[in-house]
Amino acid sequence: MLILITNDDGYDQPGLLELHRTLKREHELFSVAPLHHCSGASQSLGLYSSMELRATGRNSWSLEGTPTDCVKIALMEVMKGRRPDLVISGINPGANLANNIFYSGTVAAATEAALWDIPSIAVSVSVNSPEEPPAFRTASRVLAEIMEHGLHQSIPHGAVLNVNVPELEYEELSGYRWTRMGRFADDIAFRQLEPGRVFSYDRYCALPVTDPSGSDVEAVENGFVSLTLLNSDRTLPHDPVDTELTRGGA
Image (cartoon, rainbow, N blue to C red; front, top):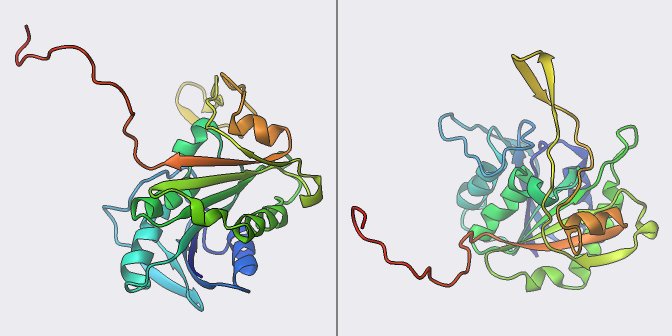
């Protein structure tokens, strides 16, 4: 299988390297990832700056751009018309759950592939203990199991499979759950570096969810791997509104 891998943390980060080690045994890989850290970049583009592409290894490149730029450059320039069978973004240190899905560069890279109708997976692992290294090995085994069962082949056109893995050893996982995207009921407070003038985001912490039942957050908190299908079409299915619109008002 021909697979494109990317991330939002940088081309030399351990999550991407673990992904590469896991997949290279059985698949042909191309890797295009950001030169710099791009967490929270979402679907942004480097529209107003040049983007240098640098070879970093066999079929591997860094790009001075965003995760979305990396996928675009890979598909349009680097792979020269060879369409990948699958795009995988990760392995991200830190879960991409609930509202954070919208900000995630990891999910955004996979979403870009989905917009090209290429099956895509975003893989993240929870990090609850900053002193401990992220459980990348657990996440890579989860991904290998997903692919062994052919789950990547049933991802609907235009959709992303968002995979979130608890911070556990593989043997300690409770299993897998299909989930929906949760919604946080609160947000992380800002730190005031200079009161009223200079702010920074505080460290991520667990937040309450408005309705945890069946959510990605609930699954991960209970030791399950969360599998969530995200649609790249943001149109909300609805019945036509029964009202008459007139130009210039009534």
